[in-house]
Image (cartoon, rainbow, N blue to C red; front, side):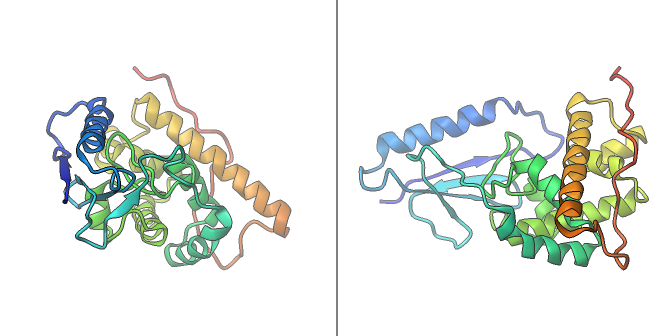
Length: 238
């Protein structure tokens, strides 16, 4: 017997309390545990489509569903940097982004967890919203290669949009490009400003580590965004 539940995220602009999302997901899973057969309770599959609809089922009908072990204490195993390095290197060259910057965004966004899902519905290593993923031609948000490909493509677009200003591009990655357009500087949001600082901090850490390991930071033939020499200076939010 198939049990299927769907949770639809609201479209941008419609009111919605993010705090209710974990509760709703918890209720869905609890309902599933109570009604599913004992042999099926350990298996649940999740799929988030381009409209933000989260579908949960014990009988996946689509290859894009991904299994989640709801009885495990370690639901979201992380993936090692070594496993990701070939993908990061390839997309680094393709989109002219320093590999240390890509690692820094992944570290800040998901902690290298390819199955991470935020309260807002962002998914995967680079925490792409389903709508953004659709714009970046991402088919499988949980697939590390697909997710990194879409995330790096989006970050490159933001850097081009803000003329290479890395803090602004990171702020747009976190809060949305239209928000940064409106303020024309770092938005006065504590979360966004902390996010920018965090990514830049990780960026410098990864750059330093690369330098120590290889004796150089970046090949001269590459043109990528470099972290600002000074720390990001932001005034207190008003």
